[in-house]
Amino acid sequence: MSGVTPPAEGRVVWFTGLSGAGKSTLATALHERLVARGERVELLDGDAVRENLSKGLGFSKADRDTNVRRIAFVAGLLARHGVTVLVSAISPYRDTRDEVLAALPNTVEVFVDAPLSVVTDRDVKGLYLKAIAGEIPHFTGVSDPYEAPISPDLHLRTDLKSIDACLNELLTHLGVHDVTHA
Ligand SMILES: Nc1ncnc2c1ncn2[C@@H]1O[C@H](COP(=O)(O)OS(=O)(=O)O)[C@@H](OP(=O)(O)O)[C@H]1O
Ligand SMILES: Nc1ncnc2c1ncn2[C@@H]1O[C@H](COP(=O)(O)OP(=O)(O)O)[C@@H](O)[C@H]1O
Image (cartoon, rainbow, N blue to C red):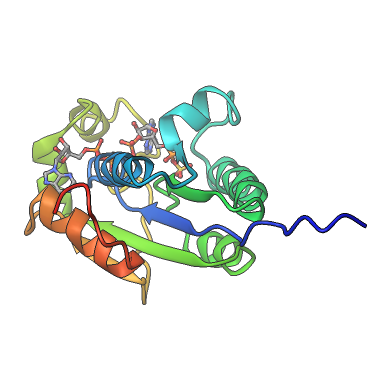
């Protein structure tokens, strides 16, 4: 047997919340900071995942659950090799979220939270207007459920705090002493 020590398991930081709540913004900012520190980190973002790993899936409960389980599977493979994995996905169903998080190592569940009125005003992708007009069926928060985490590791109110303030909370929670932005 060789004496190569396997890397310690990586963390999985799982961002959940409504469309437009700020998951991608915060996950991308955190990714940037961790990369700058030389950490091995990968971002699994809802949009990119749906264009590749989950291409063809829709937004029924069954399809969303499949999407979330696929993301968790890949996150687990990466984490096993010492990679920090940042997941950004609405992941609206509590039972599925709890199930996949329980099976992953070193998880941090981040509830990225802003009221529906705020995300509708932001309407980052112009989808809420269409969803409210009935043009997008099963739209989370409008015509499909979002089940908020009951006791997330971190609860970030993005309507009350700036991006920088949220990012600092994340870094503090992860125990990251940010030398690059001191
Ligand atoms: N019906 C419906 N409901 C919610 N979201 C919708 C829908 N149709 C398309 N979109 C766009 O898809 C993005 C959400 O994909 P996710 O993979 O994160 O969703 S899920 O976790 O499988 O529920 C989501 O992206 P984000 O805004 O980044 O959350 C939307 O842009
Ligand atoms: N504290 C905050 N954290 C994250 N995003 C914020 C915050 N405050 C305002 N925003 C804005 O909200 C929007 C969130 O969009 P996005 O990150 O794409 O959301 P999601 O990935 O959850 O769909 C962006 O335009 C971002 O600039």
